[in-house]
Image (tube, rainbow, N blue to C red; front, side, top):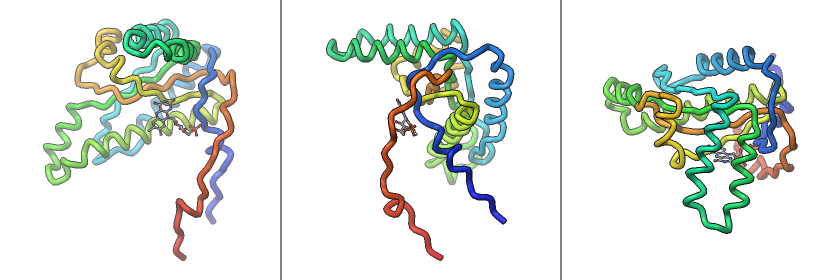
Length: 200
Ligand SMILES: Cc1cc2nc3c(=O)[nH]c(=O)nc-3n(C[C@H](O)[C@H](O)[C@H](O)COP(=O)(O)O)c2cc1C
C-alpha cells in the first residue's frame, strides 16, 4: 500500500520575499535540520561535496550590506531604487544560507572516475540543487519562508575574506529565510498533461 504524497506540503513551499525575524529559540532545531539535510542528501558517487555557511544576526546583515554596496555601482540608475528595496528586503530576513561546492572534491572525483569526468560538475551541481530543495522544503514545513538567490558574481570575491572560508569552496546560491511577512503571489501552472506522459 502506497501512501499518497501530501500535496499541501509540497504546494506550501514557495519563493517568499517578504521575510522577517524568527525567535532565536528555533536556532538549535533549525541547525540540526539543515545538518540532517546535508548528511542525507544524495550525491554522485557519494562525494558529499556540498558545503554550507549559515549566517545569522550581524553576519547575515553584513552579507546583504556588502551585496548592495557591490551592486549599486554597476546597475543602471533607473534600477537603483527597486534593487535597493529588494536587497534591503533580504536583509530584513532572519538569516541566509550560503551554498557552496568543494572544487577539490570535484577534482578528486574526476580523477577517480575519468570516464564520467564530462558530467561530474553537472551532477554535483544537481546534488547541490537537491540539497537546496530539501532545506527549502523543511523550512516550509516549519512555516519558515525562504527564497533562492544568485548574487554569485557580485559577492563571490568577498565572501572568502568576510567569513574566512577556504578558497576551494565555490559559491552556488544564497537562501535568505525568516518569518513569512507577506504571502507570495498566486502561482500559475502549465498543464500537467503536457509535462508528463504515463504509460501503463
Ligand atoms: C535553480 C533555480 C534558480 C533560481 N534562482 C532564483 C534567483 O536567482 N532569484 C529569485 O528570486 N528566484 C530564483 N528562483 C526561484 C524561482 O523563480 C521560483 O522557484 C519559481 O518562480 C517558482 O515559484 P515558487 O518558488 O514560489 O514555487 C530559482 C529557482 C530555481 C529552481
